[in-house]
Every structure is written in C-alpha cells, then in structure tokens.
Amino acid sequence: MFTLLETATHSALTPVWFVLVAVLWVGFFFLEGFDFGVAMLLPILGRTDKRKRVMVNTIGPTWDGNEVWLLTAGGATFAAFPGWYATLFSGIYLPLLLVLVGLILRGVAFEYRSKRPEMSHRNLMDWMATIGSFLPSLVLGVGFANFVKGLEVGGNPPLVTTGFWQLFTPFSLLGGVLFVVLFCAHGAVFVALKTKGEVHDDARKLAIGLAFAAAGLSMVWAVWMNVVHAPTHPAAHAITWVLGLVAALAVAGAALLTARGRDGSAFIATSIGVVGLIAPMFLKMYGNLGFISSGDPGLDMWSASSSPYTLKIMTIAAAIFVPIVLAYQAWSYWVFRKRISVQNLPVEAAEPVPAATGA
Image (cartoon, rainbow, N blue to C red; front, side, top):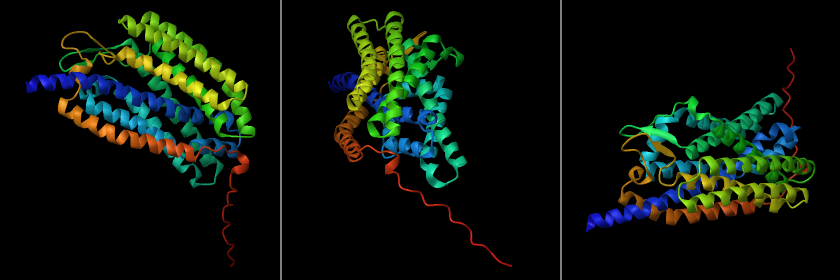
C-alpha cells in the first residue's frame, strides 16, 4: 500500500514540477528579456554617456533580481529532475558555459561601470553589458529551438549524442535570431515606458521597427514549429498554434500601441509575446523533456525526476516561499515605477586634481 501511495504521489507531483520549472523559465524570459534588450540597445540608443546612464538606471534596481529567476529555474531543475539536468550537461556544456560567461560579463559591467570616471572604462563596461546580454539571448534561443526539435540521447544512463555543430540548424538559428530581436523590442518598449524626454522619443521610434520585425519572425517560427516540429497530441498541437499566433499578433500590436503613445499597453503586449513564444516550447517538451531516444531506456520526465519524498518537500517549500518572493519583487517594481530622464541624473563630481608640488 505504501508503495502504491508513493507511486501515486510521484506520478502526480512530477507533472506539477515540470509546470513549475516551465513557469520559472517563462518568468525569467519575461523579466530578463527586457533587461537583455536594454543592454543590447546601449550602442544604438545610448549615444552619450548620460543617455547610457539613463538606460542602465531603468534596470539598475531590478536586473540582478530578475536574474535570480534563472538560478531558481536551474536549481529547481537540478532538484526535481536530476536526470534531466545531468543529461543536458552531458551534451550542451559548452553552450551553457557561454551563457554563464555572458551573465558574468554583464554583471561585472553593471556593478563596475560607475567605479571610474574615464570614458574608456565606461565604454568598455557598456560593450561588456551588450555582449554579455547578446550571448545568452542567442545561445538560449538556439538551445530552446533544439529542445523543440529534439536532442538525440542514447545509452544507459542516457547521454546526448547530438554533436555540437549539429545544434546549428536553420530552425535553431531562427530561434536564436528571434530571441535576440524579440528581447530588443521588449527592451526598447521598456525604455520608452521608463523614461521621458529624448531617450523616450528615440526608444519609441526604435521599438516600432523592432516590434514589427519580431512579429514577422514570430509568425515564421510559429508556422515552422507547428508544421515540422509540432506536438503529437492533437490538443497540444492546437494550443501551440493558438499561442504562437497570439504571440506574433501581440508583438505586432505592441508596435501599433507604441506608435499611439500607449507605452504601458505596448509593454504588456510584448510580454504576452514573450510568454506566447516560450510556453509552446515547454508544451512540446512535456513528457520527453526535449529529447529523442535512439534506444532504450531513453529519458522522460518520470524517469528523470527525483524521489516522491524530495518532490513533496520541494512542493511545501515552494508553497511557502514563492509567494513571498513574488510579493517582494512586485513591491520593488512599484517603488521604482517613476520615469527618468537625463535631467534627473545627478551631476557627477569632477576628478580631484592632484596638488602641485614645489621644489
């Protein structure tokens, strides 16, 4: 009887934790997506040091909190699905390392940009932030496209047998480009929402073009995924079609809303676009976790998940702490809700001039 109860608990909690992991990834891309976009747009919108400072300040109070969603998603994957975590690192360690390098670069850039007054130093930090945001966006886009397509695994324990260069197919490269363009559009809309004056006006103009480009790519992605790499279950297939089309239309709507000066509504629209892009990917990964078995025993989410006891403890902890974290993050965004401009920046103190020494 106890064994049957454990089996029932395991069967029930495994899908629950797959959904929770998916929610954490969706939350990460929704929040960190506009962070990535703002940093990638620094060379375009930040034509002066003050403009760059305004852009960095729009995400300054929250970027590191947004990044915690990635750490939590990775930690939840490791704890709830150790087999999934281990199999991923068996074949895509280098891409994950590139994501880590990018996150380190942008973290150092944001923390140390204002530590020295020289423009050469600040320009270096700005480029580190841009590259450090571009790398994760591109690599994660390529990676998730491969999960939709399916990575081949084999052996016991199952290991990824897809080679490194096999990851770069036309479909996966489309995923990488889509992530970059969509996050730039998301970031441009966020800058328009959080600023006023010249930065706001330029961000709004740029957001319109980026949003239309992202909408076009999203439409191509939705058609390609649902025609070539669609889920086998009819209901899941219908949902991925609906979500894909909603994502493309929402991003296109963001361009129109931005043109009308409705920055808040435009940001909601790009957010819907991001969620509509990521959610079908996890729907496609449900069950096989984005892997294609080339032989027994293969890998699915039930064989890759932790023990029933571990899942129960994690569920209790999540029920207690996740609402607290969400409440704190919502409060922090409320506190820093005001728009800023170059006129709001404090005047920086000039460098002290060394005292002259006489003979």
